[in-house]
Amino acid sequence: MSAMNVVVCVKQIPEGDQATYKLDPGTHTLVRDGKLILDDSDSYGVEMGLQLAEQAGGGEVTLVSMAPNSETSGLRTALAMGAAKAILVSDPALAGTDALGTAKVLAAAIKRAEPDLILTATESSDGYTGTLPVQVAELLGLPAVTFAKKVTVSEGKVSVERQTEEGYDEVEVPLPAVISVTAGVVEPRYPSFKGIMAAKGKPVDEVTVADLGLDAGAVGFAGAGQEITAVTPAEARKAGEIVVDDGEGYQQIVAYLERIKVI
Amino acid sequence: MALNTIWVVADRSGDKVATVAFELLTKARQIAGTVEAITWGDASAIAAPVGAHGATALHTVGDLGGGLPGPAVAAAIAAKISAGGAPDAIFIAQSYNGRDIAGRLSARIDRPVLTNIVDIGEGDGGLVSEHAIFGGTEILNARFTSGGPGIYVIRAKSFAAEESGGGPAAVDIWEVPDLGAVGAARVLASHVEETSGPKLDEAAIVVSGGRGLGEAAGYKLIEDLAKLLKGAPGASRAIVDAGWVPYSHQVGQTGKTVKPTVYIACGISGATQHMVGMKSAKNIIAINKDQEAPIFSIADLGVVGDVKKVLPQLIEALQSRS
Image (cartoon, rainbow over the protein chains, first blue to last red):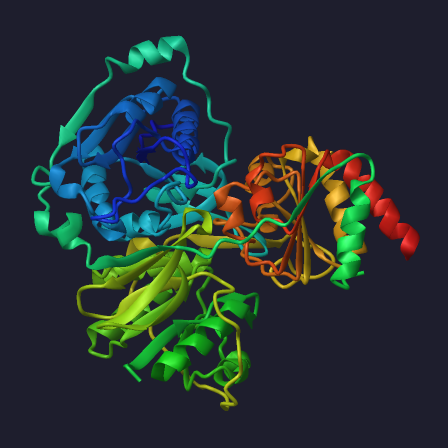
């Protein structure tokens, strides 16, 4: 089999989760001043890429990411898992970039790596817009298969089990292609100590928006073409009665179901 | 009305129209004077229900020839827009195919997208969308700032579907331009993971299981309880990712949005990803070992206990009644 070069798009997001995230009251963007980590959703793509390169008996995984501030801590995690190198588009002009702007930046960076296959998560865990994989594919003029729960490659073709509302489809697509993978497509490895040490010396090619030949007006707040007009607290749903099960807790549920006339 | 025309992408569910399409059509006709629907495959059989929900025209890109809907539908819409027939807005469901269509279309016509919309209405200077963020604890409003048709990607169950009394929509074919490489993916086979009983997103009662069940075999308790209550079994993302149950069972941000009369969360801690898909249930009952689990903050009845003990007792009690 021939070598398989895979680009995995990864995002570095704030630690914590939706319950702990905060929006900047001025810009309405997610506050990112704490430590940034590799989005857990992306670890599946990294693992998938590593396995496909290993199965092909050659080739490597290149990470592609963007950040406004040279942040690499999340990239180091993916490099420690085994990715060979990273392209980080870092530019202050990127603050406030929307999904389409992000796709333009990532597509331009991906072109530099000339991959056989591009893997992404289905959506990020902080912004979860969920359109980026296909926007990247369209900009690169490539086919895409989204929501892959199983991926196998043979003879220049990718076979994918793609989730649907009712079950799944078997989809086949020629390389190169963009595939978005769900959590659960593979079990991500933990970085080994050796991997963590090796990651420190792996190349991270830092490029700017101008280096990619993109107009700064197409990215950032200026290029976003959309704005947040208000953020308000949602009406909180009140907690009801909480009982500790003493062996008879089920009777409370029976009584509740009776009360609302479900049984 | 502030808007003249809205196009609604009518998602398919097998040969039929997906329910979410009726929800979007209902909302669209409240906002715009003219509503037209766009679909794929054979459209003649669905012209009546689509028309009955307010669309006067139903455009289809025709048979996909084994291709995925995303590239074909997006290219056909983009071609119509570049030919000068742009609508004021395009409504697309936040479904697997809907996201593909929206993403492709966005890049093709170089227009941004707003996704995960839960409500939409007229505001200052055009449409303002509403998004439930941070697990639904905050409401974010957004709008497009540049011209051209806005692409709005809307979550299922955001609006009630109501018929308008309209006759069948007029069907015509929208030609798909040559797709080249972007249309190269082929669907070889479709598998339906049948569940007996009502559909998850339409059931009046949903019983969902999570990690607290301990192991994949524990999910049988969820299926048994759902069957007894004539409801549908659901699941948290954690156990879907772990491979215990198929993805079609998942409730939450990336799964299905449900709005049942009763939602029973069993061994589910209540990650924001899950809550966003079920917090609109009329009644929420939660069983969880951890008294601090976030799910209890939105439950009408919370039982702090082990689902592996409580569920068998509950199932036995319900069986003895019938």
